[in-house]
Length: 328
Ligand code: ADP
Ligand code: MG
Image 1 (cartoon, rainbow, N blue to C red):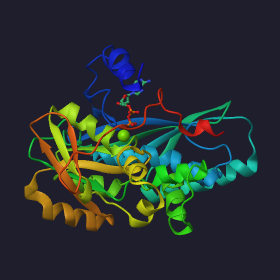
Image 2 (image 1 turned 90 degrees about the vertical axis):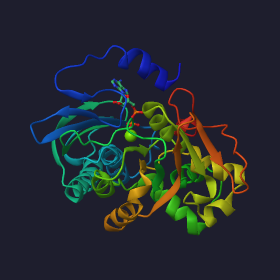
Image 3 (image 1 turned 30 degrees about the horizontal axis):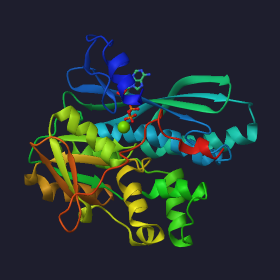
């Protein structure tokens, strides 16, 4: 059974409404009513040694990533992250390791204005789980379900770098030094697009972060919104150095289905293009207008010559892909 079938059939189907739940299972974060002005967005994400990271990953990189992947879900909701809980299963309490981990963790907390308020610690085999709580104006959270036919499709930053970094670590490809550095940085220290997400609140219809690959994650927006989409390959944020390092098919796979990008994919009406570019500039991140939502269901990826690109692999699924444990 695939991960998303499990979530839909066994978790979503059994979940109860009520208790102020505005958005339950199925989005980047749950949304619950806080008060007359605000909603809380709550999300948790886990990193497991040998699956999401190599056992020799530097503690600073691990601290960065475990928080970044959670902050990315807040960015996808347009929420301001406020509090985090950190749970860890560690084989031993090595003080040198812990001090390096916590140094980076708290530096990140300061950078993004979040406070650590709890968690859990147990002996075990390298599992990190962060729960993050953020705030959004009442009823305004960006969800996956509000895209409309005719919307533009945008993505932030660049795609495919982390997947390239992973392959480089696994030694299945050898990237030239100039792009190896950027690929490793993307894999180890992704930048959650929190400022951009916040600025998109009054502009975007739907948003989601790209954690499992663009095609799969945009697919969640399509499904949740009941619309289709068309992406134009040449309009995607492509990189010559990375493209030149591997076959066209491999590069396409990294960009469309690589995962671990932690960029935002979002939809907005064409009338706010200027405002979106201004928001991106204010947030210090590039955005690319890559396609449009269509009334016709399904996702199509259009090549430069107008033909449709094949979509053999759509993205990451924990119960059908190998991830890093192939190599560790
Ligand atoms: P994301 O990649 O944005 O973190 P996921 O794809 O991991 O989201 O999860 C999809 C949805 O399923 C989310 O709403 C998440 O909270 C929910 N979910 C995943 N696993 C569980 C679980 N074990 N119990 C309850 N909800 C879950
Ligand atoms: Mg997400």
